[in-house]
Image (cartoon, rainbow, N blue to C red; front, side, top):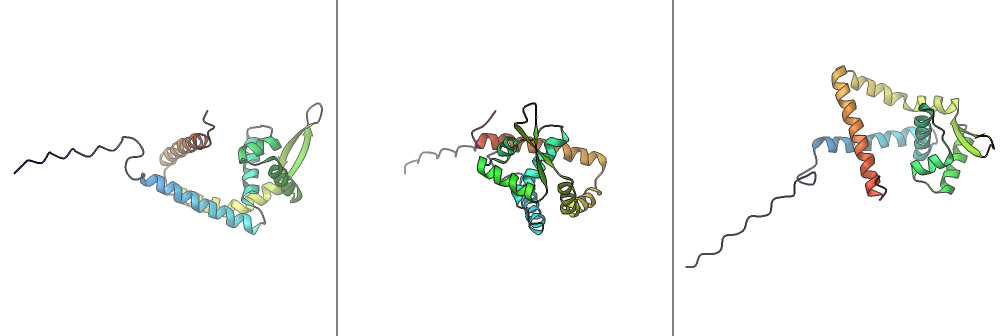
Length: 172
């Protein structure tokens, strides 16, 4: 009877985020994203607006809140659209009364985009149910808990932006 050589142990899994199943929070964030997308589709669809329309208005609103100029190039870059698709988007939003083009600057060549009062009214009406339900959900948490969740969400958003840049080959 010969002794068989001892089997070598299986290599240990590499340390890091790839080892093991995703954290339950990752699954919850995926589920939240899916449900948020469904809400946007439903709210936009009832108002004859495409997801890209709503995303464009969100980009303009975010920049406007920071007193930043929004140009067609800003939308093209942030929404990852071609120039013709950006023009069609802007034409659609101007035609629906949600956006206006304004020529600014000394030579008046730069086109800036501005949301109209109608865009703010329609957006408020579309997203009021979501805000109301989220407010009710948040009411069950203390200020300290909400602060922790806010820090977490900001960190997760930053991580998602970095991952998106990496995935597109545009890592900073």
